[in-house]
Image (cartoon, rainbow, N blue to C red; front, top):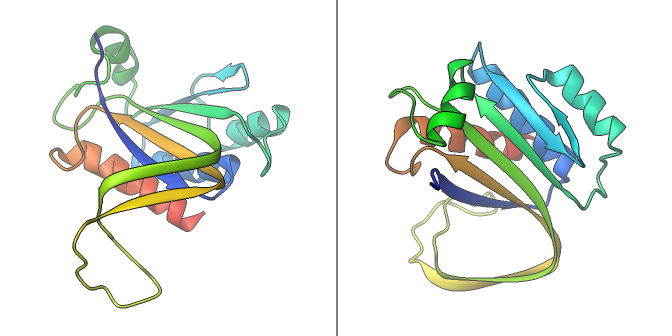
Length: 171
């Protein structure tokens, strides 16, 4: 049974900057949160920011890292068991387990049928009708959030999405 909704964000930041900034934002937002990581075959459970930093150093993950990283976020301990039993579904109206995968993409070309500008810092916010667009470049990081629900339709998934956007923007 496949559960969860994928939301994809692209960033030019290094994987380690994204990874540590997202972890910092998520741990700050939920007092009893737990994070597991999987990077270059190294798996750690219930990591804090210090052990996350040690793991990125041990795996030699730096700004040139071209592999993939995964983070599993549990707002509270019972979400860990819920993931094995119910997948990426809401445990309660307050949330459920979340995965965040960061993947290096090289020499890419992406297209979209309808792009909508959400925020631009170089000019005033003004309404632009959605349009077809293509992205191409040498390298980019693809950040996939696997949350219980569509962030546009459910509060907890939106809170996770906003935390990841804030983390990437602040990194």
